[in-house]
Image 1 (cartoon, helix red, strand yellow):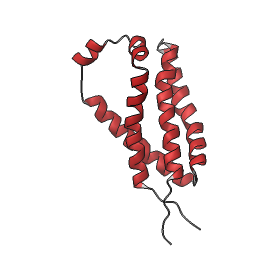
Image 2 (cartoon, rainbow, N blue to C red):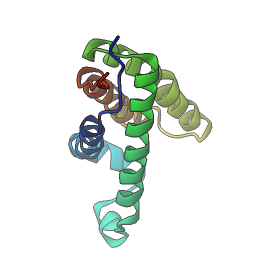
Image 3 (spheres, rainbow, N blue to C red):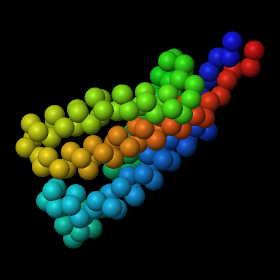
Image 4 (cartoon, helix red, strand yellow):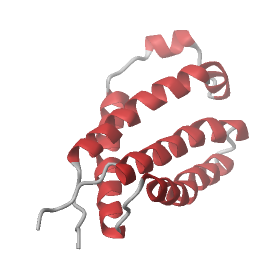
Length: 139
């Protein structure tokens, strides 16, 4: 029987996707996102910092490693299974959790779909990558 092992190239691909997809997503939704957060381009430019990028990179590394480890333990062996599993995990753990936080924080409801949609997109793309790009231990 083949035994799955962690595929570090797939994990790296997830980390890269987790950095690139938000750039595209928030590029599309930049204006409504800034408006709903009460931000202006002047404010963003005046308060630039590398810290959020560093945190995002570390976060995506931890996310990719943990999701890969879970998929290995769950014996996810296809892109389809990875997609379905990531969707089933991403909706309650990310989207609905964020929705709850935003509602109790009196944040704009539409903002849930911008921020939560981006999170869910990362979940499902990560599931596709990790589920489809398998690596097995040699016996």
